[in-house]
View 1 (spheres, one colour):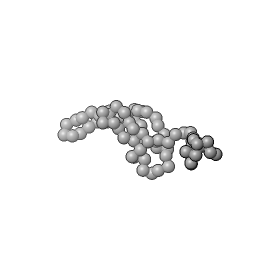
View 2 (view 1 turned 180 degrees about the vertical axis):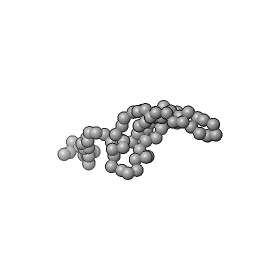
View 3 (view 1 turned 30 degrees about the vertical axis):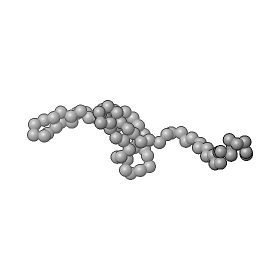
View 4 (view 1 turned 30 degrees about the horizontal axis):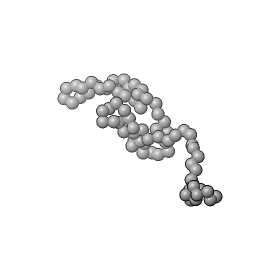
Length: 74
């Protein structure tokens, strides 16, 4: 993510500054052509909410009939 300072001019013109890195994140490496919606700035402009995938895949354990296990039945 990059940040660019902007100087306002007359008649609605502006002059952009040099782009500066704001932070690095792998959000553009996701397998979707529509990456524009994967982040949102906070209303105060101080933070970003970023949708990302964890680098590590964790195992999910699903228990069915778990109430039977509480009763001591296998």
